[in-house]
Image (tube, rainbow, N blue to C red; front, top):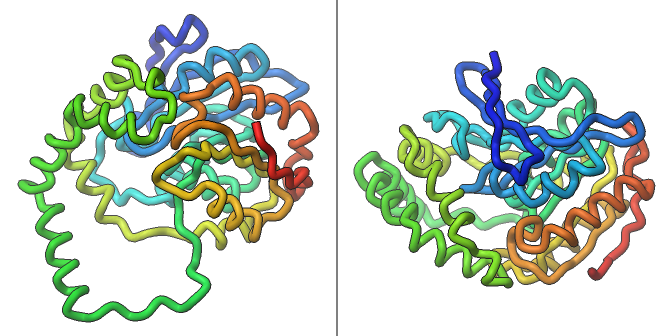
Length: 316
């Protein structure tokens, strides 16, 4: 069952709820399906929502049918106490493509949304014809065997983790980090262009953090073990891959991360641009143009065919 309502997404997008399992999942759609190009599905990062793609929806919908979705636990979707993981969000995204969109898409994701999108593209190839990653999260398998941790240190770390993520401490931690002032400080650290950190952006992130169940969902997200490593997923990937890196991201060394992705998927196409962790919101015009040119310029070779991208270490 879907309940639709109009949104002020610069006049182009409409929002609806989709019932997935027992959860309400929010999404928006803009533009019209076209026979000469694939539809796009946009997936936000940690703490964000469909609102974070507002600028991109307005621009990309002029040339594509564009969808954006709130992952379970974020945005306007249900704040559930669930076993959060890349696999859970993979299943959510794959079911959404199958049940709501109805045809394979180019999926684009930022940060944890990038990791979740990679999980879909690698493990549900029938749903994805192209993958765009923007400063994606997710670890790689270490080249050297990881030394077993000291059992006493591990025991202490496990105890601290259990205490911190128990109901009362996690409640106070969440109350602290969800303050508008803390959200703004975090955004100012990960955006190169400080003018892009607007009151609206802060409010878009603050508002869902006040929803019922948000505190419990926050704690649940940190209790789930890590999923498949990026290199494992890249070895399963068969579709074209475009990587767009905000080179000023303080949370990751973009050049180093890019080299890791190229190592396991040399067919990719990539660009480094002057932006932080969320290039799609900070410099939307550049990102939208790169996506549009890649799709229209032959980056998408078709379902089930391993990407033949230029392997360009591009600058923009």
